[in-house]
Image (cartoon, rainbow, N blue to C red):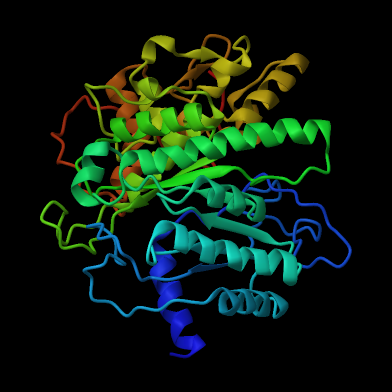
Amino acid sequence: MDMQQKLTILTDSAKYDVACTSSGVDRAGKKGVMGNTTAAGICHSFAADGRCIALLKVLMSNYCVYDCGYCINRRSNDVPRAAFTPHELAELTIGFYRRNYIEGLFLSSGVLRNPDYTMEQMCEVLRLLREEYRFGGYIHAKTIPGASPELVSRLGMLADRISVNLELPSEESLKRLCPDKPKKNILAPMGQIRDTLAENSRELTVYRKAPAFAPAGQSTQMIIGATPDTDLQIVRLAEGLYRKYSLKRVFYSAYIPLGTHALLPKNQPVPLLREHRLYQADWLMRVYGFAASEILSEKNPHLDPMLDPKCNWAVHNLQLFPVEIRTADQEQLMRVPGIGFIGAKKIIIARRNGQLSYEDLRKMGIVLKRAAYFITSWGKAMPGIRFTPEFIYRGLTAETRRSERGLPFAPQAEQLSLFGAPSLPMLEEGKTWTTA
């Protein structure tokens, strides 16, 4: 099999891995070292300038001794198989980099022979890139559950970010669909990486030239929709992972029907909107300090496809609203849908210099089509706003109901009423708001 065929097979097999983003890495430029895109001003997905680098996303091998029910590379699946040698993959990566095709590498693999052997192959690729080719670009590598701690440490010293796939949201689902990957084999390396990162951080404060271990931290990925786990279970799990293992990111991957296992949904791809809502809930926890219990509850265990999680939280906690924009502190303002971290700071600075009208808020970038339902200015709400759950919900979902594209289901028909909520022409972007 030639290199082109291997590349075709192994890049196609890697397309289901979604954790190909990075943040927080700042590898210093060195004379004679190639690929340091940060120094050249080209950064990763979550850099301050928002640019995304191109990564070669590829598997070391798609041969796998495991038989995970949801995975396209499972042992029992009849798909073309291929494997790179470490030298082949290192030369391919550096060749792509020199041609300016890519700026980094995302490397994962099926389990070839056993976890230790696979990890040794992956470490050798990274060693060749770092030590022989002097490659200083970004590398994200996935550890293999069950590999020895020594190999996890070695991988972390060569990569910028390492991750351990959690695979599924619950231990029961793991037992059913991937019995070869017990929970302890996934959580043990996560704990090891957390401890090593903490120890390395202390070393770097004492001796700044100490070798860095995975400077962009660790992340994980879980598949959603392949099992009946609720959004509440997923959000709670993510919150626990952030707290216990100091993860940089939890990635969510909507299940694509690829398996034949009797427990898997057939011909029912998970709506990407569900994945999107989980990322929004994840953002609330990481950036806005929301707890999982605030976003969802046992009574409402699923995210509302019609509303983003922040709006949904606000609608269910109307006792905390409306917020007076002249007096609310930053934390209160950031909890208002349509007002983010920057918007809250702008409001606090602007109100020192005088009155704030709704038109002023719009000019500051506040998303009034959401925020208007939850704020007052000088004790007055926007004209036409009624502070009732039904009115607010209908107003917030009006745009979504007008365009059902992307919804997992069509909204149910509504009974017409002579006294229904008025239309909200003033809540469209581009309109001018005036105070009462």
